[in-house]
Amino acid sequence: MKDNRIKNEFAAMEVPDMKTGILAAIRQKKAVSHRRRMRPAAIAVIAAMLALFGITVGAGTSGMLNLQNGSKYSFLDADGNIVKPTGFHLEEDVDVSLSEKALANIAPYIHLPITDDEIISYQTNSPEEMEEFLDMPLVLPAHITSKAILYELRAYGTDGNAATIYLRVQTEDNPDAMSVYLRGFPGVIMTASEPEMEDYTLPDGTPVTIAAAKYQEGGLVAHALYRKDEAVYHVRVFENSKHELMENVKEVLDTVE
Amino acid sequence: MFDAQALLAGDENALADAVDTLSPELYRYAVGIVLSRMDAEDAVQTAFVALWRHRAAVKDPAGIRAYLYRCTYRACVDLLRKNRLFVPPVRQEESPLSVPLSEEMTAALSRLSPVERAIVYERAVMETPYEELADHLGLRADNVRKKYERAKKKLARFLPDMRMEESDEG
Image 1 (spheres, each protein chain N blue to C red):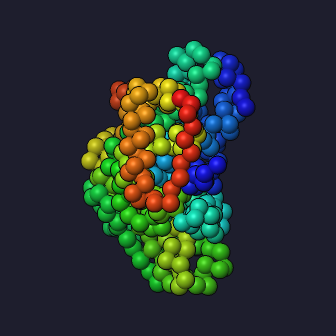
Image 2 (cartoon, rainbow over the protein chains, first blue to last red):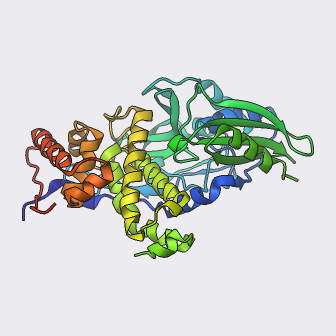
Image 3 (tube, rainbow over the protein chains, first blue to last red):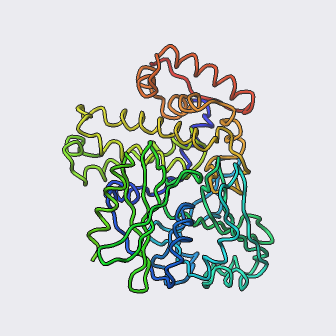
């Protein structure tokens, strides 16, 4: 039997566990996720903008960007062998918590629209400066921090979208020692020029910002953000038509007590 | 393995089993087309979501796998159109859209069209019969055969040491 290099490479490919994400996507048609606290209501506007980039506001990291708990993956070398894992994705439910200060720091580095292939970058040479920028401690594996020479926050654009924002830590011996992708919603790729924002109110009068944008398969997604009891909540609703989308997200919001 | 009948009847456990059983091959298929791990995950997720939402229309339990292949292919093409990523725009190790294949293989595959990449994966990796492959892609079997021959010639230019098994079936 001849050696089939293509077959071998594909066979050696590490496959991520997609079950959780798929089942969540199926159930999330009207999912409501309650996210972590932030303070001023004005932040909701920035938060909505960041949500358009895929950054989730809030979540369960307790104000700490713990890069040791992400899911690891491997790259293959030219021979199809698995090399040392170099990348970490944050787990789906371990979104990054961003404080008011972090949002304010990041906002100037994120503009719309982002051009194709453009990379927006904020770089620091020390973990302390990146911690200051992100306003949270970074928890990195010791073998990374001992050799880290550059900490970089990047937004990566494709065709007018900001597909992903990620933190990259470069070390002396590996220019891509660790990349942490701060992408909260895999699959959500939104067109920067098209999202529509709408103001709404909860039954108790709390103001809500709704941002609607395109989703996969010609579908639509609405992100609704509101501040209540010193916390910011994030509601996501998926639909195929814009009318139903706005109807349904408001229907969900109307149930908030 | 999964209970196809139960899945079509709306059993989420059966769906979860189907994800376990079929997502690895669909993920590899998607990676082979979009050349991006993240987009591949999105495409596979889109396919399963589509299956679940439209399960009532999938009358034949034996047709679930083919349905997922068709959905995955369409999702890949949609993503490529959206992202204009027919060629990976940045180096593999720098991109969040990185490819879990060797750089040489990625470069070679990126020379092919998305449909050629789909055909190469299904023929060279899965050894899918032409008739079945044609059904997945909405093409005629003889057309698929020609495209595969063309794709092999293209790949041979960029992967001189490449060998692909070829059976007489299909």
